[in-house]
Image 1 (cartoon, rainbow, N blue to C red):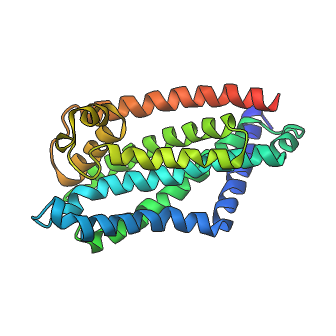
Image 2: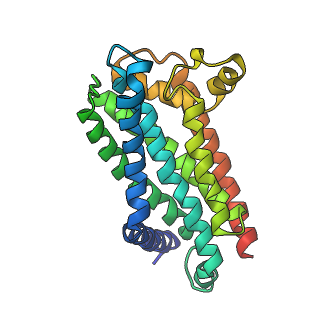
Image 3: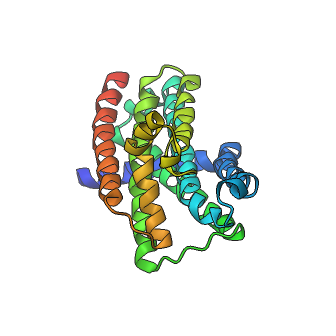
Length: 254
């Protein structure tokens, strides 16, 4: 077998391991789906009438809820990586003739699978709340590509966080950070309704251009320069996080 064949086989084995862990951790899997759904129902039925009296708030808020959902799903990757390191299973893998990078890749691919399932379920429930996108097939493909790039970048950032912290409890801090970001963006309310200082932060952080890109693709509104900003943010985070994860993994397992 060639080196590439070994690498693909090792990565496949680690992906299978991470996916099985996700399926067996039913509580975490349910929370990654139930929490965004509950928040969406609250925003639409409790706050929606005050925020948008026209009754179309579901169309506005669903892109933000999708990002909240993907963020929560990716954040649990930090906990999984920290748990592997604390339990010594990574040292065991390192003593075996396998490609070391497969361990981290397995967690990231499992994160993508977890987020794909959660996103489909959230969109399905969103239809029941009145979400009515007018996107065609190309727009839906663009939405899937945008979400794939965002989840990939966020998952590698979560891997870095899991490699940096020393305890599993510390890795949980990444979840709070990711869940907080959509609230300080255009995910739930337009940024021009915020105070100047908050608006300045909300307009430049990555969730706002990604939200506006998804909203434009799904609802047929213009996205302006948000599409380019979103791609630059995701690609930049992905490159930096991937390189950082490689360095941190070597240091933690040396």
